[in-house]
Amino acid sequence: MSPPRRAYVQIEYDGRDITEEISKMALSFSYTDNTDEADEIRITFEDVDGNWAGPWFPKVGTKGG
Image 1 (cartoon, rainbow, N blue to C red):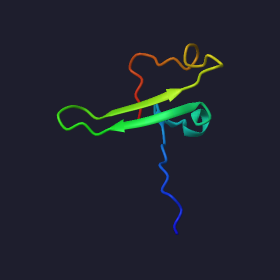
Image 2: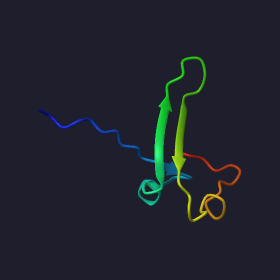
Image 3: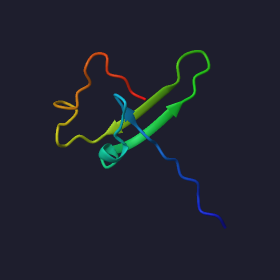
Image 4: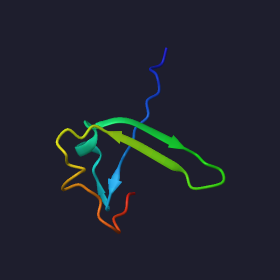
């Protein structure tokens, strides 16, 4: 019997791979392949240190990858 398949998510933010830095905070990930509009990616984080409300808060013009 082969092992179960696992999904892997790699996250780039402003041209930098931040997967390892945020992987411990990620609670869930979902991807929706929409046919009539843009696809949707949703990541839910636990931010007990307040990083996303402070120094990690996205600035205007920042791009994900």
